[in-house]
Image 1 (cartoon, rainbow, N blue to C red):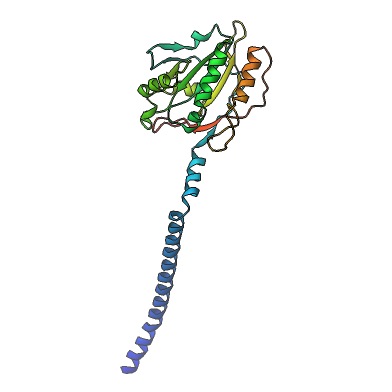
Image 2: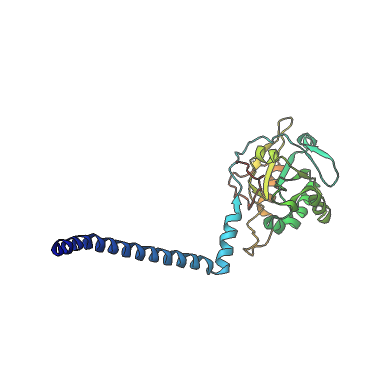
Amino acid sequence: MATVATAGARALAVPRRAFLATRTKQISFLSTSLKMGFNLLQLRSTAPATARKNLIIRAARIESQGVSLGFRAPHFELPEPLTGKMWKLEDFESYPALLVMFICNHCPFVKHLQKDIVKLSNFYMKKGLAVVAISSNSVATHPQDGPEFMAEEAKLFNYPFPYLYDESQDVARDFGAACTPEFFLFKKDGRRPFQLVYHGQFDDSRPSNNLPVTGRDIRLAIECVLSGQPVSSNQKPSVGCSIKWHPQTVQ
């Protein structure tokens, strides 16, 4: 009986040793994985603040998207928070050219150009250019871009153009707008509808590249339109913050 019991114990010891060896490997693997995960988290959390900031900035930047030249200006009817007046596309029909700008209050790209946008508008509006600015940002996510603050901004910077509020964001979609600032320059040819001739940047200056703000690109396009010359189709896209769409809105 003792011999049988000993043999049975030995038989049971074999699978037990295999089981323990397997568990040891599993524990070792789990420990290594946890260490790797901890190291990865530590690496992420201890990355230089400048690197994390750069990642955020890159994620926030977006270029204006392709809208075909020749595109007809879509109809709009929007309120101007500063005056309460409703503005329509038809209000600009008598002008030879129309500049439509999608801007907002908070965007650093807009703030970077803000004073020069006003200067450019004042200069060319005297030469016959019509100008209108539109804010389409969601106030649910960015209340500082709401109509009350728009009115304050227009008054503070003495906007010479109407600054309109696109609450539904339908106008931004109709134009194919994607960022702030974004510029659409249309020309009028007699009774024909406004047609897009320029959809590009203000100039090469950005908030962080130390290049002076000149408005070179858009000035050249406006000069061509007002003088009856063709506008070059070689156009650099505008760069800025994405339009802040209403939550749960699929674009």
